[in-house]
Amino acid sequence: MKKYSAVLFDLFDTLVMFRPSLLPKITLNGETWNSTAQHVFTQMRSSLGEMEFADFYEPFVESHRELLELRKKDLREYPNRKRFEMFMEKTGLKEDGGLLEKFVCSHMESLCGAMVYPEHHTEVLLYLKEKGYRLSVVSNFDHAPTARELLVKFGIVDFFEHIVISEEVGWRKPHRKIFEFALARLGEDPSDAIFIGDNPEADIMGPSDCGIDSVWVRRKEQLIQAEPKFIIEDLEDLKKII
Image 1 (tube, rainbow, N blue to C red):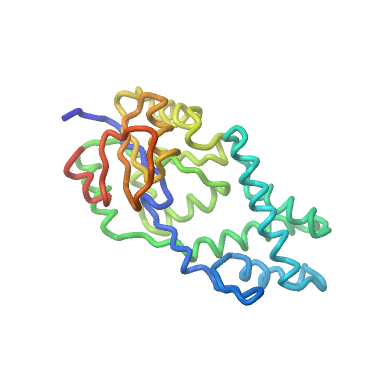
Image 2 (cartoon, rainbow, N blue to C red):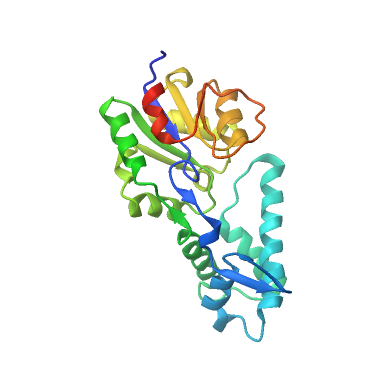
């Protein structure tokens, strides 16, 4: 079995699980679903003038969709504040006294309420550290402070030598530059690292293009274009392979 010196982890739905069902429920036009929209609307109500929720929701969603399209073009990362800049432009709101930052913080607060940490992941991290592996996080996320705060909140930040967030690097997985940046921080060669993640494109294709072996955490059945070194169902299974 090949010996690695560094283990790089994706964050969301690999280490920390995002549960959309824990987001606040909203009801609009007879339909009900979960979204951060209600929380943001309620928190920012005093800054929205006469705007009703139905008028708030459409530009809230459209700004998100437009940000996703920007990212798809060249895998550049745009900070979450870009999304709310778009939102404020669509709704005619003017930046005043940190209003933009308040929108971002409200949205992130709601997202954090839907994050769950499986306690047994700590046992896996302890196992890897005891085996002498160097650990890092490499995550796509548009608000680095929130990603770091979650690692602190769940008590696992100290396991990792480096935390690489796409907002800070300017590139998103699967772009090779974010992986090269992470390896440079560690001072490791691609052949000495293995990447653990749940997303076939970002976490399997990306590392493979850089010569990094990968482990696919199969949370659901998906088509994958690149071949991972290993496939596991739970992080606990890492103990069997590395």
